[in-house]
Every structure is written in structure tokens, then in C-alpha cells.
Length: 303
Image 1: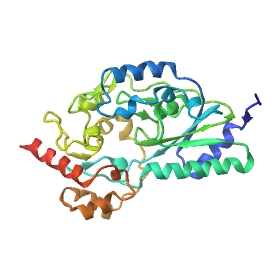
Image 2 (image 1 turned 135 degrees about the vertical axis):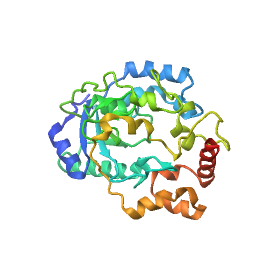
Image 3 (image 1 turned 30 degrees about the vertical axis):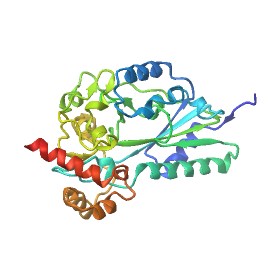
Image 4 (image 1 turned 90 degrees about the vertical axis):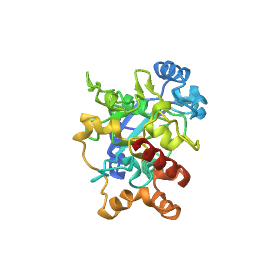
């Protein structure tokens, strides 16, 4: 086998910064044995609800070399999305959906990073992922020194909190690797305590009780009577808002008064207006009928 291409980590991180990523870390591509055991336990408990796609490609989720045959390293990048201002009263929308769809935004940035690296290293090969393949993005970001996994199961970065999105390049190069950093949650359980449905467990998020799951992934005409959406019509930020690390995180996305007013009116719009609001945002994952269902569910909870 040929010796893998070597590229200095400092060069990769410099290019990532120039392109606009808030941070970049790199880990060696290898099998995640501990993650496999935890993930299988989570599935056995039925915590994936009816997201049956999560039962597929289990080995690939813990082994990036099965995604790309030449995989030597995983480059993880993060982009903060904390808005400059946010909704102060229901109906609520998760803050990551206020602005441009992160899937498209980060994927475009990753392609730019590949091109930038190939300028000086033409044999560099990489595949870009942003929630588009069975890869454990939070785990790789954690192994790359970009943060730690909080009790709400989200990556927490010292500067961005958990208001961040993650992308990866699985690539064919060797470099200097980053080391994981210590978990700083300590004895804090604020995210666990505040969840209105008790969705956060020691074994991970129980989607059957999770507001984000029910407002987005659950396609049923009616939602379970015992679920409290707490005013949310798309996603949920309750556990993140309770996290002390998020209170001090820097705002990264400018939200105009006009955009905020548009979001504030989401409970009183027709289908045409909703299509306009959701265009090019993560809200494109739900249909108007789901929005109405979620609004109705919140109204019923008030009775």
C-alpha cells in the first residue's frame, strides 16, 4: 500500500478559517468501539421512535473507513448559529432554522475547503458530510478537540456553546491529530431537569418524548396526547437555553427586525406564506399540514 499523503494540520486549519468555519479539528479515522455499544443500546431501548433509517448502516456509523475506502483522517468543522435576537414568546421555532439551511451552507463551504487544499495538494481526496450519511458527527467533533458531549447529547464548544452545526471531511491524508478536551458539565443537570417531557436520559435522547422529534420527524396526523410541545412548532431549544455554556456564547447570525417579525407571525400564516418562510431554511423539512398540527397541539395543551 502506498504511503498516505501528509498535509500539516496547521495548513488545513488555516484554509478552514479563511473559508469561514469557526473552528476545525482533526482525528484519525478508526472504528469507534465504545460508540457502537452505546448506539446499539439506544436502539434496543426503542429511543429512535419510528426513525427506522437509524437502524440501518450501523457499522458505517462507527467506522468511517466503510464510508470511504481511503479514509485516514476525519476533518471536523463547526459553524455557530446563535442569532442576534430571538423569539420571546410562542409559537417558537428552533434557532438553527432562523436563517439559511446549514446543510447547504456548510456543504458548499466544505467543497471550497477541498478545492483550497487541492490547490497545493492535488492528490488530496475527501468526501463531505453534513447530516447526509451515517457518520457520527458529534463524536468525531469531540474526538477532534472541538468540544465535549453535553448531557443533552449535543456538542458543546467553549466559545459557541451548543449553538453550532457540524460538518466533516473523510479524507485520505495523515496529519497531526487533535486531542479530546475534558467534559465541563460537571454535576450540572439543568438541561435534564428542564425538559418538559423527560426526554433526556442516561442512555441518550428518547425521541418518543422529544419535542424536536414530534414537531419534525413525526409525520402522524395527531401527536400523542401526553406530549407537551411547550409552544414549539419546529424543533426545540429548551435544553440548550438552560445550558450555562450557551448563555455566554457569542451571537453569530444577524437577525433583522423584519425577519424576527416574520417568524413571530408563523402561527397565523397561510400555506403560501409558510412556503416563503421555510424556503432555503431547515424548516423545509416539514409541510404546512405539520405546522398546523403542531399549532393545534400547542393550543390544545393550553386548554
